[in-house]
Image (cartoon, rainbow, N blue to C red):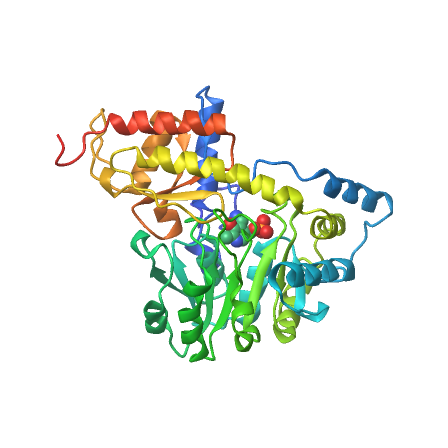
Length: 415
Ligand code: PMP
């Protein structure tokens, strides 16, 4: 972050809290993919964390109506009454939970909601338990808020899910939050009721620990998987649980920037202080659009999920057909997180040794022109993430290229 001396640029010193952070690795890979594309290479990017569908037309229409009606001014700080009511109705309809408007907060994406919660609750040295692999932003935000991320590896053998013994061991008097994300970015793993129960038991014995449940991929689950929110499983946990959700993924509204949180009013009020002194209300027009997304027809969600399922099945099968790669079938989201241990140490045709998953992904991008993201970016190696939120045609071509490239590798012990 700190810059070398430059006569035209006065000395710059980044604050300690961000000195060790950088823009996300996913963005960096995207930039490299863009540069290769610009140079004329046929790059396929499997790195994006957003649906390739369009925002539904009824939602776009609602935004246009809002603009024309002059809905273009500051709104209530953390969400319009209409949007809060729509969120309360959604929590009742989908999750069987009763929340009132004072327990709802709306921000510029789920990202801002998580940020507000951490900024509002962490003092220096406070610990936040994050199972890995995790969405990279979690640990970075904890650090920005002067907290200490406590990372717990949850590998493929444990279904990428945190186990009660691991949680129990990680909790200290300084633990403020456990952050869970189901279905998960990047692993696609989801927690069923029976996965949550033992974790909840541990949490009930540790009253200082709050639970942040990131449910942004709630609607993208497959094969009849029953999504549950832990807040619905144990009434006593509700008073220290923050549900995080949003319209980005379910309604293909990533650019609109609307996310929300549901939690105890005391927490919601503290989060409002952070938002009040930073960004104020999320965009008025986007809020009007989100009301329509949540209150309007929901039938297309199932059709979109079915389309994601077909792509998941294709990608998992194609990956597992490659020697050296082992991919678990994810329950949800639109990512595969495949183990590439069998390719670490392999030698490329030009004599390069693939030392780790970063080297593997970078080699794939430079030689097969397929952009994926190494597990290291999510705190767990050796894996790599593919986002299959792209067309079948692109996926077919990308997976064929990955298979071809891997076929040229000389693997250790295999000659
Ligand atoms: N949580 C997870 C796990 C995510 O993958 C993302 C988006 N990549 C978000 C939260 C944030 O979504 P948004 O800010 O667009 O609502």
